[in-house]
Amino acid sequence: MKILIGYDGSECAEAALQDLRRAGLPAEAEGLVMSIADVFVRLSINENVDNTFPMFVPAGIRRAHQHAAEAVAEARDVAERAKTRLATNFPGWQLQSESSADSPAWALIKRADHWKPDLIVVGSHGHTAMGGRVILGSVSQRVLYEAHSSVRVARGRAIVDEVPVRIVVGFDGSKNSKAALDAIADRAWPKGSEVRLVAALDTVFSVSVVPQEPEVLKWFDVSNENDLISLRQIFEASADKLRNVGLKVSVVLKKGDPKRLLIEEAESWKADSIFVGAKGLRGIERLLLGSVSAAVAARAHCSVEVVRAKQKRIEGET
Image (tube, rainbow, N blue to C red):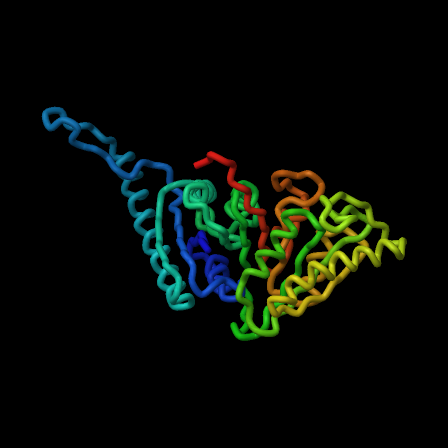
């Protein structure tokens, strides 16, 4: 597993590192910590292009370059500190640290496009260029919207590592919601960890009417008893996949807005995290403001992992 971690030394970045110990991550993995200096001035000045005619550099430009160099050096130290902490918590990981001068969100996205991690981890908040705080909507939101990998918006909680983890999963039968189940099944969770599959009724689900046949979309009505029985059977089949890897699983079917239901269920159950697919059955290829995934990631009080199903490689593609 390859994990890209955006880290800026803020309180929320620290919480994100703490949260990784409750994310079921494997004992062996590749980890890359990135800390980005939010500066846009080129870091080097070639003052001697020609020794005969030295290039004149205004004092303001020199100060800007000096500031950029100091910011990148600080970012390098920040990334290295995070790497050291991760090495303590995950001694089996192969770890690297990097720093750069760029827009933080786009630096992470570009690095992810090149390195192709399985998961990108970001804190829910961070530092602005002025040293203040920002809401989910800048770095975290941009990475969440634009990255091609799964993204975990991490919010740490002060809980002992050995305590079982509680996970809420938004499920509608779509490819990405099934990928969320696969991601959970592939992780290593503490003994006794629990998963709660949650679905909002009076909506569409992807089902297979006949075994071994392609799935179709079907509208389920909460007032129809036969629909409820069929839907529970579908969920129990998915739940068994998680039970087979040692997780305790329960199923919750309720009428209501899925954005509200998932957050309320996580709060009342004191869940550590919520897993949702990046794209549901509504045909939204990219996260849009107001979609279930984006709304849950922005509003939940626990960590939220937005899972993107891995794309099949096209034949002949390099």
